[in-house]
Image (cartoon, rainbow, N blue to C red; front, side, top):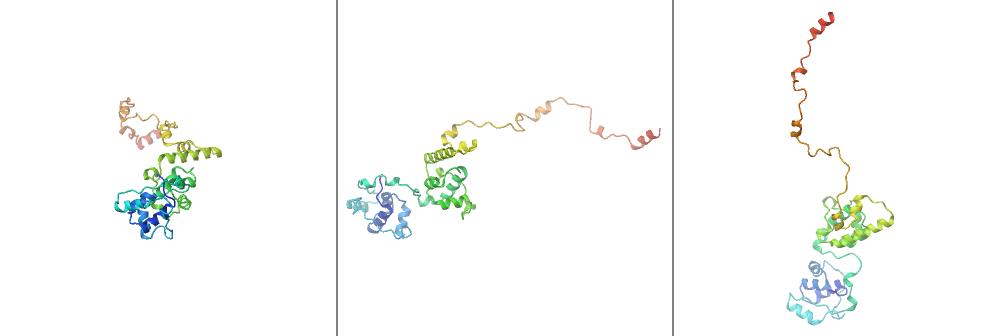
Length: 249
């Protein structure tokens, strides 16, 4: 679904000039309901001038009247060729307020497990800023001691396909630069499906190789050697007096 031009300014106008619910406005302009509430409270879009969607031929007055009568009604945007592709604009993605506190954890995960990703790629994936990424890379973030790395896909900040595409792009860039990659780095640069389908890497034998079937029962089955020896035989040494007599003789 296309979004209206100047979505935030349109939301400001609807908040100031209609009695539509926050959810109705949020669904129409493609914002989060809490952000629309922030506009009404004066915490968001301070200084933004409202943009009339009726005067710009994006919304019919009848749609607003119908929406004000029925809070469950969803406003329908009039077809506007100039608005096509507006949601695909370049730049950081919009992150809902409820998920913004999860972004540092996602950034730390990307920095830790995919260091080959450029800052611009991380910005597009989780909707953050380069200073925030730099602070987490250098561990100078104000809350770095409490941040735990979490997969951004699990947090709902991006799709797995988007992450895989970014990783593949980073792989091509690194290959073009001629940088040598270790097996572990090469596995990280693969998509999730390809990585999971790869066989386990061969490992060098360790000092305990071949002992996995060893048991105490095998040790007990070995034939005993020197069965006649006992502990006392090791301590029955000749007396010192006997050694002196031998020397005199």
